[in-house]
Length: 114
Image 1 (spheres, rainbow, N blue to C red):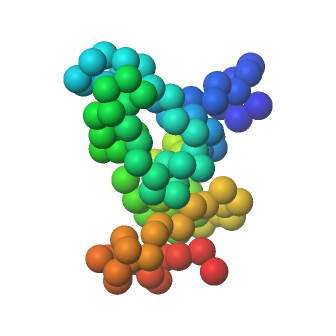
Image 2: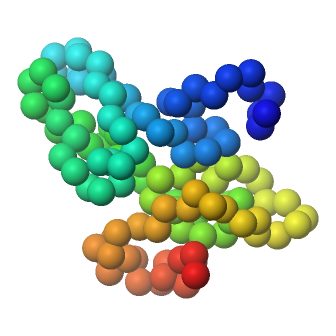
């Protein structure tokens, strides 16, 4: 079990991208849970009670992963691990950023997973 976990918490995200993400609405205090697919697809992430936009709290920032060396739009905790002597490692769960993001950051295209 990675990280010494006994059971996988779907909101953890340390060893793999979290299948679920949550955010408490700053307007009404409602806890909202979102699945990975709508987050990646760029869907509206609105509070279920009041409709407040929770995208800034829920949608992760695109990072250059320290584990794989690729750019990832839905990173896990492995993206922040220090580099190791084995070099870049394969990542089956890499999520490439949107084309819109890549247009704004053209130099990052060289770090896309082939």
